[in-house]
Each structure stands twice: as structure tokens, then as C-alpha cells.
Length: 558
Image 1 (tube, rainbow, N blue to C red):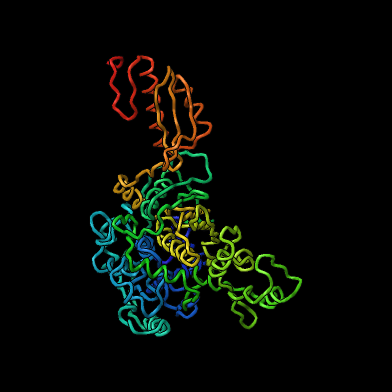
Image 2 (cartoon, one colour):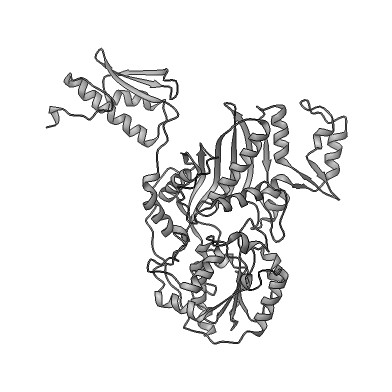
């Protein structure tokens, strides 16, 4: 049996077990072919692996991993069916990314977390649509895995939920109990023969020129639907890392311009894991807080509001020396008032520094905050580097715009919460300097849809296709008239109606060439304009009166 498991070919094409998401498994290492008669798997949810893995007993431990999203149900099933020695799954750790140990159950309640998805799977299984009741599109199990084998996993593997069973206990106490269970649980034999399964194929992406795609939307949910539609339609097939089965559809430098980022209306809630006001508020609180909770590698709030600099004496010298020239602020204690000095390090509140600079010069172009530590993230190249790299606050049209850059972005699961968090940062800065908020612009260097979301994304887009509303064209509207034997096209200001530019010609082709070289239109606006120009040309030829936006009726077509 062990040799059969060792010889399986996983979804990454590598021989051995685990057979799914192998590069994301904490134990055993992806470089280690470790297959034993161990019966226990441990899911430690959102807790950082370094706080759990070194403390776990390994003798009867088959696998241990984070479990971030409900979509992890399918890889879990694949790995258990690939190694049917696994007969127990122990659940512990933080249940939600922005909540700490000890308040997980109280705060998460019945939310659609990965922990609740595991509980729901073992309690009720999946339905005929291969989803988990109550979890919408957040979970889908591939049709290549037979229903009877999915039910076999549920029946033969026992879930031991330490978060519920020890709800008042610390993480250390739960780990201690997990170790006790790993050593004392009744030894069991495999419940089936080891198997691997194929994957459903998705529609091929459409060709495009590569590089950035820009999407404009109203609220965050509206913008998300439009953005996902573009990544799904045009995303290039790529891998997240070498030697991985994590296939993605990817756009480089995907840019989403959110025109109404402070709109908290959730009546449109298209996200694969629907958001609640409570979940958004919890994430906002975290992203605005300098505190780094126990068990976390980082938070964006901690990176932005308590950015660590390892040489405090350098900052003190810059502030105090007469050679240091700051021609805007001059010398004085205000230069480092957002710096907290420690023993051998200091922490910088970058958001408050942005507020101070904009308060002095609201048109400053130097209001940039970052999370990146080159000596740490770039040189060590580890996987816990922050995805949000930088923000820039800019005042334009007397509004506070915020541009945010993510180096790598899960657009289905991560982007929605990130967007609401960035909107909270924008609102915080704008309020402090007494200006309204403007645009929130999110640029994702690598914008990805993971393969374990492909089916869910397809279904979501079918359901919400009618909600992909086109924003009114902020670049102006076109008025078309026939005057003195010519077609006259006037570009009108979208608010004042003032004529900004005029184009004159006798044919739609002639006007297409004149307008096309200077204007940048949305697809729907361009199609509309082309249709109206064709109608105007036909009316001009036949001598019939032309009126824009009326249905075209002419005897020459019948």
C-alpha cells in the first residue's frame, strides 16, 4: 500500500504524495517524499505555520497545513483519497485572517470561513451540484471525483474540532492536546485503495495584446465583477510557482479604478465568499492598526503604521544634524514625531506621516508608504512577503485619490477584502486632511484566478452578467447632427454640456478615422457611436432627417 501511494502522480506531474497543492503543504515538505502509516492530518487554518509546525508530534502525523479558504475542501479530499491511511483530521488555529486566537468562534460565528466549510463538509457532505449547502460558489468539488468516494471520505475520516471542543483554551493548549491525540488515537488501517483523479477543463482564454487592462467601476462589488470578467476572459495560463499544480489565469498590472469606494452597500454581494459588514469592519480595524497579533507573520496595518527600521540612530542623526536640510518642514521635533524608538530599531507610522505632509502641502507627490523590506523580502525570497507593496496618496480635483500596488493578488478571495481595507486607509487620510475621497485605484502586478476557483467564477459571471453595468463615459458624450450636407459630431463635456471638440465629415469611415486617432472610448460607447454614424450617413445619402437615438427605419433596407 505504501509503495502504491509513493508511486502516485500528483496534479503537478510529480511522483509521490501529497497529490494536490503539494507546494503549499507545511508538512511533509514538498521536497520530501514521506509516506508512512500515519493516521492524522492537522489543519491549522490561518495561524502562521512557525507557531504550530515545530511543536507538533510527527510520529503519527501524515500531513499538516494551513487552510485559508473554503475552496481548500477539494485538495483535502484529493490528498485523503491519495493516502487513505488518513483517518483523523484535527482542526485548530485562527479561523479568520483578521481575528486572533481566542475570539475566532465568537467573531466568525456562521460566516463562510474555511473552518466552517470543513465542519459543514464532515457534517453534511456536498450536494448534487457538488457544492456545500449555504456556501454559495465558494466550494466546488471536481466531477472527476466520484460522489461515492467523497462520501467515503466523510464517513471514514473523523473530524476532531479542537476550536469548538476547547473554545476557551490557548493555542499552546490546543497544540498540546493535538499532540496527545496524535500519540494516543486508535490506530486504523486504510479505508480504500489510493487514487488520483483528473480535472475538469475550462474554456480557453481569449487572445489579447498582453500587459495592463484597465477597468472602471462604481462600488467595490460592481468593480469586482467587471475585473473578474476581464481576468477570466483574457488571463494567460501560468503557474504560481515552479513545481506546483497551482495553475492560474493571470493578467499583469491589472488596474481597477473604483469611483465610489466608500459605498458600503452590500445588496450586490457577488463574491465567491459573500462578505458581511462585520467581516469588513474587522478587516478595516486590522489594516488601520499598528498592532501585530500573535501568530501572524505580518499585517498590512502593522507594516504601514509600525514600519520597522533597524538603525534608529541614523534617523536621529538625520533629524538632529544641521547638515540635514528639509526645506519644507525646516528643522524641528516634528520631523520624527511619527517615529517610535526602540532598542536597536524604530517603528514609523507611515500613514500619519502622509497626513502630516498633506496637511503642510496637500499637492505633494511624495506621499508614499511601503510594506517592503528589501533585505528581508527581496534577498531572502520567502513566501510570507506582503502582497501589498506600496500606496500613494494624491490630491486631485480637491479629492484624496489613493493608488495601491499589489505584487501578487488572489483576485477572487483576497481582492474584495483588500479593496475595502484600502478604502478605509483612503477615508482615514482624507478625513484627517479635511477633503472628500476620490478614486481608489488598485494595480495588481500579478492578478490571478486560481484553478480551484475556475468553476465558481464561471457560474458567478453567468449569474451576475446583467450587473456588469457600463459607467457613463467620464470623457464626454457625442452629439451627432446633419448640417449643410455634412455629418457634424460634437464632443460635449459630461457635466456642463460645453462643446469641447467638433468633427465634420460625409461618411462614417471618414469620421471614424478622425475621432479614433484622438479619442479613447469604452467598447460599448465605441459600438454605439459607430452605429449612429452609420445611420447618419445613410440618412444623409437618402435626404431623410436624422435624429440621434431613434430607431432606424428606411425603405432602402426593405
